[in-house]
Image (cartoon, rainbow, N blue to C red):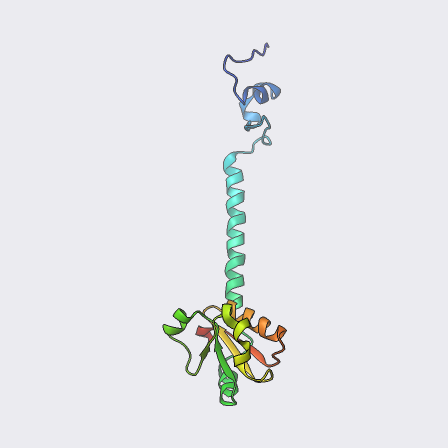
Length: 159
C-alpha cells in the first residue's frame, strides 16, 4: 500500500495514514491527534453536558441553602420586641418596593460607611435581604467589625 500525500494538504491525511487508513479507528483532530477508538464527538459533548448539569445542581443547592438564616419566625418576633434592629441590606430601590415593618435600610455596599449609625455594638441586629446571600455577607462584615449580637434572617420570604 502506497501512501501518497494528497494534492491539497489537509490536517487529517497524516493521522489516517498512521491508523492504517481506517476511519473507524478514531477521529482526527486539527492538530493531528486522534480521539480514542470508538469515541465520538457526541460522547464528549454528552460528558460536558452532564458536568454542566451537575454544576447547575450544585449552584441551585448553594443558593437554596443560602436562603435560610440562623433565626426564624417566633424568635425573630421576640428579638424585635426586645429592641433588636431589623436591618434590610437590599438596595434602596428594592426596599422601596416593599420591606418588613420597622426595618432600617442600609444597602450592603454602604454598610461599612454607615456602621456608626447602628448603635451600640452589643445591640441585637437581624439582617435580611432578598435571597439570604447579602444578609449573610452583612452578618460577617458586622461581626468582623465588633458587633456581637448579629443574626441572619436570610431571605425576606423567611419572615
